[in-house]
Length: 171
Ligand code: XMP
Ligand code: MG
Image (tube, rainbow, N blue to C red; front, side, top):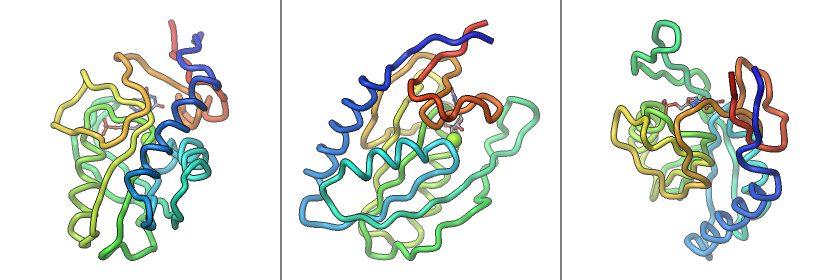
């Protein structure tokens, strides 16, 4: 499959800094626990936290969704949990992309039960037209149309995560 650049590394860098500035303003004087969703969010999270002006602790979680083939059944489970306690803490979940909304709505509901002081979500990409359940991120890098994207942490069958640009897959 071929691919075409959708967002260049320069555009990504600019947008990530804008997001970090906005988050730093919102949490000024505080401290964050940033929870990245493996694996796709690792590069975005690394860039985002280094551009933040608030101290943060980091942790990671990994989720698995079951279903046949490419159709998700909506059953999401935690395959790797975070190790930090989030009770009474300001928590920011960082995800690569929101598609149907199933993964993030499950994770938000799960982490809310642990009593964080606040819980917000920052996504790098948002495919709004694809939602199966209502979900709105607090911070969004870019809205995109349907289509499969790779690069900047995102993969196609584990390929392409290390590409510095975000590319859209073409037939
Ligand atoms: P939801 O639950 O919102 O799932 O449907 C979000 C997860 O779906 C994956 N995803 C993608 N991964 N390029 C990718 O590399 C894409 O275009 C794409 N669309 C969805 C991704 O794992 C995300 O965490
Ligand atoms: Mg992912």
